[in-house]
Length: 260
Image (cartoon, rainbow, N blue to C red; front, side, top):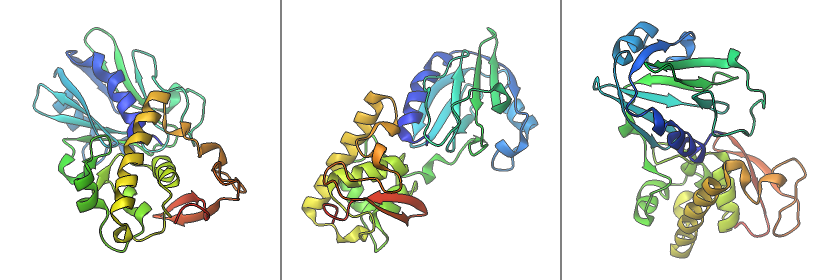
């Protein structure tokens, strides 16, 4: 968290800054600047430029600038976007629910005095100048069945690990993956290339439904499985205790009865 759903909410929140001119850049945390770029280099590239677009690809929020540069904003697990002193998301799973300006890691001040800020308690996000967007896979909101088949459902790696691989499908995080596989009745540890035609269709259908539903409900924490994703939690469908494993480097909850 945030996952692609939250970044889409942030993108919509950032749309009002399109057309605004950047008067100042606040980059107090060198750690938060990625790719070896310095605060001075970011200020030179961004300062005096107008924001021409606010885009999203997967978990990356991109601000296009009239200078020809692009500013890539990443939010890690705990980052919030603050625009004009407001955040579109009040709750993030795994993050402090405090809203402390001491956690402001990067900010833009516009010529009208308004601001855009990344507030990140754990400093797991980051800012990139001209990010390599081509390294990201098909976006979770638009991926087609053919793209899912060609890019994700290949090889003997666990299906959940493939779903979390941002170079194959951009925007899926831990909560989206677990919810989708739970609804689709697929074991997260199954080899990605073991799915038959019906499995693939079901996976694609549920993936698209999950992200659309999460977006409409306000975040990735709104799934039907979510309250049961705790030690000893029971499957909301079958009533048996959920398996808790580490797959793809992430804590994974699944039902041994209906997920095969």
